[in-house]
Image (tube, rainbow, N blue to C red):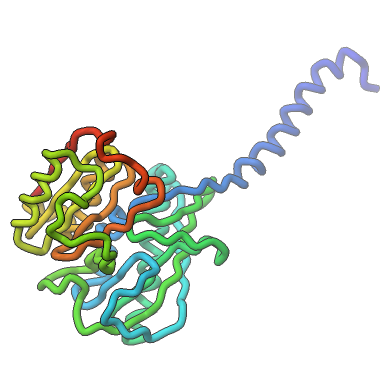
Amino acid sequence: MLTFSNARFLLPALACVVAAMVLPTAAQARNTKLLLPVSEAVSQKVVQQAVSSDLSIVFGAAVPPGTTLLSQEIFARGEGYPNYRGIATDDAVTCRIALQNALLNLVKQARNAGANAVVGIVSFYDHISVMDSTTQYECHAGMTRSVVDLKASLAKTDRVFGGYAGSAARLMPPASGYADINDVQQVPFLDQHGRETYQLWLTRTGPRAFVVAEDGYVWQSWGTPPDPALPKDPALRALQNCYNHGAKNCQLYAVDNTVVYRPSGAAGQMQQSNIPAARGQVGE
């Protein structure tokens, strides 16, 4: 018989059991959406080695001119797991691993099909929602894994995008038509010092890239990196620096002699007079 005295101790215990049954289920159902920089995954050695110098990968739905599509849309899913190789990892790390695995899947499909380019790469989570960006990808992180779904097309091209020897998977979005490469006044978010930095960058020899951020930071890169551990691709290098310094909405403005910047609705409405002084001019 259950007396009141016994029940007093039993009920809290039952409550703990119920909580233990409910909480893991709620936790396992976690589905956190993250938008993360492509550069951090593409610059990893495993991706660079897989892509090599004979294959190009291009993020963003726009297909670069001069490419011949070989396929309809193809798909790839990558997954990353916490405690990778016994080391506890956060969502950003597992997402990066997930994107790497998805890219390696796309590279394998390309090589099997005799393609030398994977173009039109966009995030396509669960084959429902498209997220089109040249610099970011969408990842969904849970308690047991992180997932990245990609959609793309296989293509043939007569040149590696960017066209310089030894290039590996250059991040080379198509021209946006936003402005002439030499029109310094059209570069967004810059004060006078930032415009002077851009003018100096225009004198640099290629390959080169220029990155802007909404909070006034700019990054420039050109040539061969002084540190072999850095990405060879100047666009990846400049974006990586921008993201690593926590700048807001890092975006490629120009690569080589081409303006690739496409303003978002919010960015287009921002007045340059309200932008802080350009900071973080980094060049190699």
